[in-house]
Image (cartoon, rainbow, N blue to C red; front, side, top):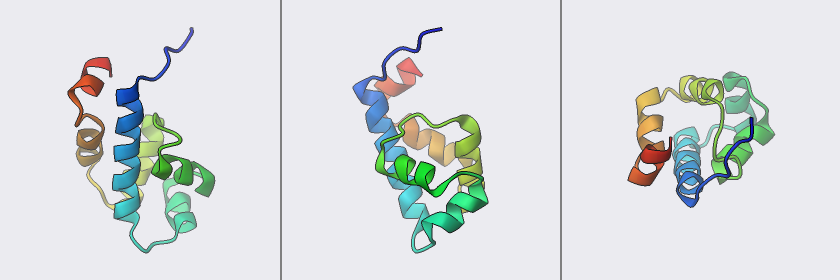
Length: 88
């Protein structure tokens, strides 16, 4: 199965999500949060900077748990752009 290229709206959603996660992490260390979420620090860095705009559901759930964020808040950040909701 061939994956369709990401749209500009999906890249924008990834940047919004990354920014939200970075803000929620605050002064906690990147490695500490990544370990708590079960991912590598490099993966978390990519998500926070928007270089990985479409993380797996399990990764996002792990980050939500590690940061004490309701998963719905992360979903709302991703779907903030109506065009993303239409292509998701």
